[in-house]
Every structure is written in structure tokens, then in C-alpha cells.
Length: 475
Image 1 (cartoon, rainbow, N blue to C red):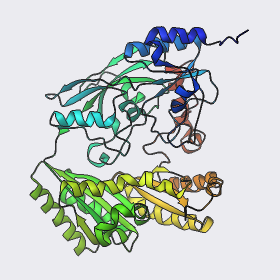
Image 2: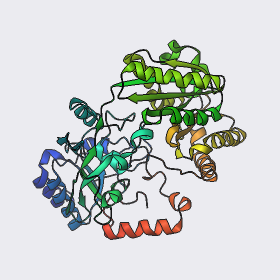
Image 3: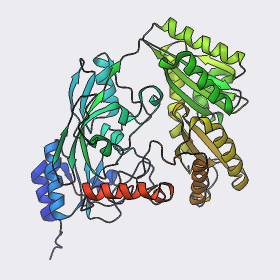
Image 4: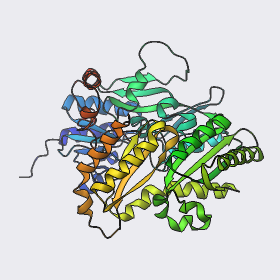
């Protein structure tokens, strides 16, 4: 007698709601949705559900409530903390938003764009550009990550310095709650003092309180020009003095200020070799900075040249390259954007997405480097990040690609503990823009005040009393 699948009826109901082709049940079809981008986390699911509308998601959530089946929302599956990966046991489904991808409205008079949560970030950027506007969120995974994932982790990227992160860029949300109700909050209002800011609860919640299905986002005037430069700084302290100088001289136009170690650049030498001595800075550090302006390109370049001249006179920098064309600017940014992928050729990478006050970055980097070298001389740090807002990607790798992966992996817990202790000694956070997910869940109660954790648990229980929304993530 054929074995009866206890979930057959549930699967049939799902097929009725969204159509059989959009309910994936074979191991082969489900596999890409059950493992995270880093390949560190994997799980099981009864099915992968691919709804097309908010109403379909509402119906699916009500069904899961009825059957006590947990839901893991998933967008582009580009996360680095296992937040979009289901649990190892199978009483759950993955709800993929990849078919929920309509750009609903562009309101130029209100400077907003309303999009479905499954819309790819680059498609939102392109739609804004075609309308003569800018949606400024920009990050390495923008060709595959989705707006829902960006909202779920409160993504930042390279232009936070000027435009803010996703919480700053969002005016309204549409959400399917844990009970299956639809929260209609797509308001394009910049002022709305009508009680609690519910949208801010859902942004950064990684799908643990409900499923974001659409968002109304801010648009900005499209800059008329950009000026990009890669600078070799005298030392790590010079980075902080340089950003202070840049803010004083041209704060409104300063869009990005990225710290990149020459070790990180060395990983992509093929792209960097034509750019001269800047990439072999004696200090080991470079800054990629960019101005964007409503003035013409001549004005932007002049502004940048004046800043760099003063920085030379103050002995903050040793060398500088200014991009002479749009393509050269893209080439410089390509170097920065290639680092996350390039570092993988060294083998096992232990990544840290941290933030510290800008004033303490230099001390943190120097103090932590000494401690790392003392304990693990067979490792190297690969450091890059958005120093303009205090966010560093502080990664450790073997000295060579020949080092067995097990060598560094066995040190992961000890390395994480040392780095995170250093972060908190310097008044920082061990999670800046990647979220908590599974990777940092156990450590979160050790790093946040007990009152904060209690309040978070109370919110979770109030909004998701059955604990079906992405369980075993964050808390």
C-alpha cells in the first residue's frame, strides 16, 4: 500500500489557491529555496509556494494558520545570515515572493514609487531612472535581491551616508499579518502622526511578524553629475579626518565614502592593475568617495579637486585618482563591488557585518588587528565598508587559498567572540545591515539589554501568537 503523505490535503488546498505549477513539492524543485547564499544554512519544507498577489498570500497564511504550518518568507535569497532559510524540520513552507513583482505606481508629484515586495531592486532603480528620478538604495546584490528582503533586513548599501537606509526610504507598507489579514498601509505621507509607526515594526523584522507584500518608497531628483575618486590615505586615522573635511566642504553632495583595505583590492588585481600606485597605498588603506550634484560635471569635478588639494596639504592622503568618465567611475565602483565575491577564492571566510561610531573606527581596527594577529597569525583581515555611516565588513580569511577550510572553520566561534567583544568595547553593534537570522540569534540576548529582548518577545507574541512567522529567526 502506498504511503499516505499527511500533507496531501494541505498541498491540494495550496494548489487550489495559487495553481499547481506554483506549488513546488519535489526535492529537485525545492532545493534552490532550501539553502542560503553562503551555503551555511539549509532546511526542509513541505512545499515552496509562489503566490502572485497579496490576496493569494493572505489565503495561504490563513491556511497555514489553520494547519499550524510555519512560513518562511523568501525574496531573492541573497541573505548572509540564514534569515530566509526554513527550519531543519519539515513542518513549514517557503513562501517565495518572486512572482509578486509589479511596479504599481510612480507618483512624480509626490516623488514616490509603489512596488510589490518581490520586485528586484535593480528593476526599481531602472523604473525610477526611466521616470527621471532616483531610487538611491544600491548594494552588490541589487541585480537579484528583492525589495521585500531589503525591507526585512533594513538594508543600507553604499549611499546611506546621503539618503539613509530602507527605513528612511520607506513611507508606507502593505503587510499580510500573521493571522492572514491585510494591513493596508501604502500611504505616501511624509507626516502622519496617527499613533504607533507600524511600518517601522515590520521593517527589519526579517519576516518574523508578518509578510511585507508592497511598499511605497521615496524618490529623489536625479543628480546631474557625479565625481568619483579613489584615494590612498596616510593612515586609518586620516579616513576620519577626511570625512570630516568632506562634510565641511561639500556635505550636501557627499554621497558615498567607502573604506577599502589594499588587501581587499589585491584580491581583484586584474581590475585594479591599470590604476597606478593608489592601490598599493603604504598605509594599507584607500577611500572610494563620490559626490553627486545637481550642478554640471565641471562643477562636481572642481569641488572634488578642491577637497583633494586641501587633503594633500593637510597630509591626509598620499595619492588620488579621479575618474575622467562615466565608464572610469563604473570601473572604480566595480572594484569595490567585486570584493565580496573575490574573497571567496581564499576559501572559508568568516564574515562580520558590524558598526561602530565613526569616531572610534580607527581605534577599533588597530586594536582588533593586534589581537587577531596575536591569536591567529595564520589569518588575514579583509576589511571594506561604508565608513561614512560606521558600517564595516570585517572579514577573516586564510593567508593563502591552500589552507584547508577546516582550519579556519574550527576557529569561527572564538573569532566571532573576539571581534564582537571588540565591537562592543568600542560602543558598536555586531549587526549593521545583514540582519540576525539564524547566524546571530543565539548571541543576540548576550549583546542587547534584557529589557530590549523582553520587549521584542512581547511584540512577537502579540503579532504572531502561534509563532508561525519565520520561527527560530532573530529570537
